[in-house]
Length: 134
Image (tube, rainbow, N blue to C red):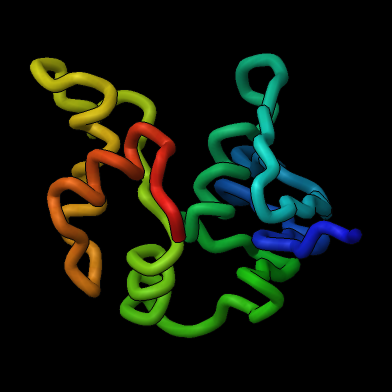
């Protein structure tokens, strides 16, 4: 039985800066993540891991290529992209968005507190522990 594709990147590219300061962070990256799959991004510092995660999490726009969630292309203005993020992701940034005095589980539930429709506290905790049913 084939795995259905949850998240797909097709020929995604991202460049920062211009002229002599131009840095190509990603060049035509293809990626497909199936429902239930776990994926690890590994590589040396500066190879584009965080940029790719930012694009996959709809925090950064690629300069070219396309991103699909459950087969639907992600398009639109920032408000629409924010709705997509709210519906599909619980995104916690690497450093500055983590609250030091909270546990990993508590940090992971923070995006769910702002979800629409509202997610109850017990459901947020279950999702953070990876025991939630969708």
